[in-house]
Length: 546
Image (cartoon, rainbow, N blue to C red; front, side, top):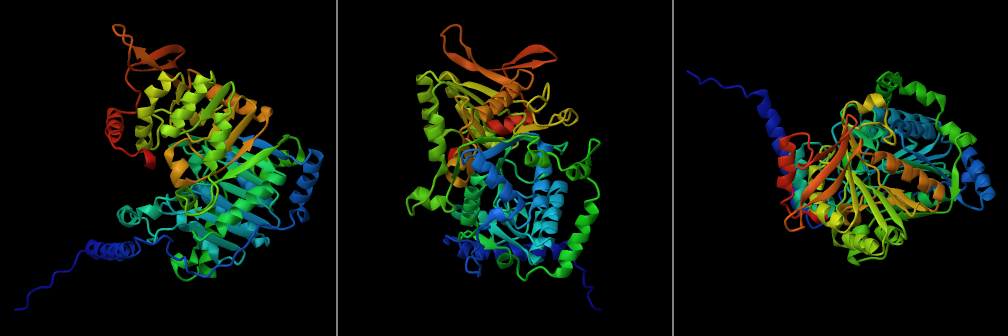
């Protein structure tokens, strides 16, 4: 009698397949562990550059003339409302005539991400040359919808410092990272959009629903600054430098054969179907895009630009090599530190991650010794989205307060929406978080960009930003700061003094609830478990990674 053959469960085949993939990636990781360049580095690619004559486009001609009228300065306008950040991106892409360059740390495949992808595809259909450069450090399932656009003859996509493994199984990515940490820990954190080498949008926002403050589960306070005039050409040069760097790998080198036109058309049909509506809390964002506002208001002068001198500050694509002294290049933290350290009367800083390290603490101490008022707004534990970063920040609170720094932490449930960038309906969910990176010096000049005031931005990520000499813009951001640090919207931290010895004995969180001032001796948190996790993480010596 023959023995019965047992059929393998379906999950067994899946697990064997995943194990095979994991072993392949592990082998690649081990063999490539000493490699300084990412996979696909030897793939042939053509260098390209920004539009040589932007004045041949409608926007280029308009703002070349406007810049001459304003003494060669550039025009700026802040975009603080999250929804406006989405609208202006869509409208700028729709206005492109010749070239479109996008550079982002994160480009999500969610509702707003797909709508922006659709707009990019339609720009290419009009004959616009499109270049998209995205980092590979924080990708999720669905984000790779963007790469299908590579099949379009007018679109080219490159991935900055990619993983060899192109899937999204966390264990496999973690395994590859473990064997290639020295390379894969180095990320491109830049955020930049340039149209026709004539106008640009730069700031802290990535592409995704939460960054545009329309996701009930997560809303990030952030800022973009619209820039027109000579500064746009300078920003384009930084894009070209990254685009043509050895770390920017054509997506075709990573994913095998180029996506087919059939796949592109199928994706186009999907995007067209999803373009019909995007409604959140009763707001139809597709119809709002069609109004042309706020972009048309900026172009027409109805929403006036502020014209001022400005400086682009940007890390070299090979920042890691520059910092080690292996090559000559730029480190933007030096320019930012010089601008911030020159404060004479006041420094205001908004940063979601605050891990100043020895150099930052020395700068704050020096400013205080010169009687400069220093006020910092960062994330509270209850509003934190990265507990590891929050755990590193915890060590600096008491020393900062002892040096006379005024410290505020944003609340997750705001008392009012003034300065928040979001609607009252959205704020009711109580999922507000900080993501803006804004520094104001003496209410005369300011920094805006992608750089947090933490060790990762200073040493491990590439960053970009603007230093703008404009009292008008500085006052606008100072007003945003003042609104966000109101007692109803933030916690103000102080040190509790020990009556017996006069030494600090702990932190106190001051806020306002239901119109009444409240004090907490225990750090406000979403749960005891959240508080326990961050306290446990704070024991790890990981400052330089945060």
